Length: 269
Ligand SMILES: Cc1cc2nc3c(=O)[nH]c(=O)nc-3n(C[C@H](O)[C@H](O)[C@H](O)COP(=O)(O)O)c2cc1C
Image (cartoon, rainbow, N blue to C red):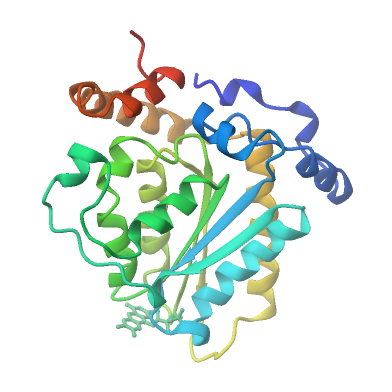
């Protein structure tokens, strides 16, 4: 069993709104953070949930609105939130040059590394994509493909995520499955996602807003309680075992990454 799973604060399970607020206020995010993060952020760190939305339609995007509503729900529980619309950023496609494997840094000078860094500094991540041909948008796929090294080094290990999408009608389940799988690949556990079939509606229906806010609250609870699906835990653990061969092979060139894995108990010397 992973270290963070064994530290469930029982008092946080099934909390009332008021108690949840108090518990989040006392949350220091210590369990997920590396010693280097703690040194940077201090022990007074506030819980933070990051939303990442990938529609090209800017503020007209219903997916962006859905992500913001999940964040609003998390915000009512006391979590800090931030939303990044990657559809408005420059994130190029991966060119498979393998430089990130050697250094941990992508050679492309665009917005990808900054968004990844924001995700790394968050306790929870809300991913949102419109459904395009029963799949995620090209903007989201470019972001996912650029994450190969982040997956190998499990940079979201122990964090929690929630996937959301909007669609005219089809592909919602597929997109939630893809986004969930991506978060699991990064080492994060997911709570139940949310796919909204919009049809011709211009704006999200009230029921969708209510469900989105509820997901935000559930995400905060998952972060606090560390409750996770055992199947996801098994899948993530076996992936991590496999990726440890890469971290070990890179030990000479990337000693900090190796040391991080030793600190987290993912590599035993
Ligand atoms: C290129 C493209 C492909 C789409 N593919 C699908 C699809 O496969 N199934 C579907 O039901 N809706 C599809 N849609 C509709 C969008 O999923 C839907 O309008 C969504 O709510 C848009 O999200 P946004 O407002 O965040 O941009 C597609 C729209 C576009 C522009």
